Image 1 (spheres, rainbow, N blue to C red):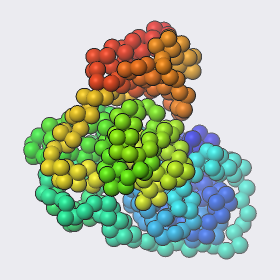
Image 2: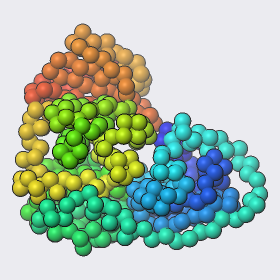
Image 3: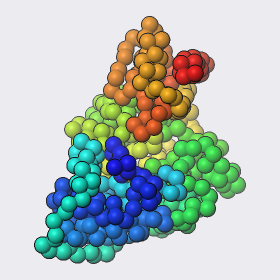
Image 4: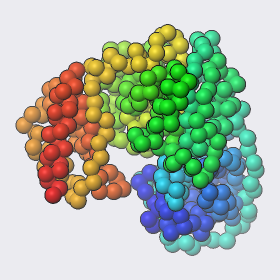
Length: 449
């Protein structure tokens, strides 16, 4: 079925995902996971309520008891699943996808992800067969409010005595982050300036995806208007957060990974830190300098979480702004990162720019550059051959990564579309990074004529 992807379920409504398919997903999830009880939540999209209702019907028709936490972010489903020690959780969300999309993210006990090789393919097969037995016993639906416990858990990551007043622009993108920010605000000394704050499934200010440069202007304008110390923006289900400094400069997620890794290692020495292969040198340098162990994992939340559990890592981060925490059942959170960063600003008595500028100079990076191409595999091979003479190391953990003494790059294909994703970094030489980025793009563009 078209809506089943490598790590989750995602598709156009109603062509690829509708109430009938949602019902079958509930039945198939019950058959594969065999849970007694499941947490269910949904985002603000107009189609989420009816899809969620059909999903719940499929679960209860299979004899599964459902705890409905209502409108929420993905991490609240993760939290409720591990905190309440239930057998699984399902979030109905399309995060930052277009208006006419929706989807689901599935976990089992302890919020362990269900992806292609850990049950999602089996669920897809049963959805396609659509031959479910009549239920012997119906499950029940119980509303569940976990907000107080969730907020208490989030606040446990910072020392309230270390916090001081800061002016903070928060842009929820009309997604689900706003209500959580309102609850946190009561416990923090920060002044929040709220942008696109009210959840609204029509997304009157555009789909919330701050990774796209065109979606950052409202946050930047508010930072300048209110002379804020920092800006934060989220995607629709707020499992990713994005940071801006006091000048309105967007901070690449890569540098936040290093900052958070350092924060954890200062509290937990000799811990393992997980990172993705796209941009690595800054993270590895910081982790090793603080006595930690840097472990590289393939990109993607299922791989990162699996690696974190295997290493019992205290923290893991991807440059795409996914941040994972051991005390959060190794899951990703869009709320914990900014709380930790603001605590660092308060403790250091320095603005975010001063905490990061030195690292950006030491390891300048291109940021992720995407190219639509006809034959991604052949172009990756061509680029690898072109630069292999300069390489002192080649790694195939995710796509291909070439280390070339003072610069390196990672080039990989998208799992879902004919797109190549390029990241380039250097050791302290911004001009070299730009030059090599241009060279690689020239090879890609020349090959795809």
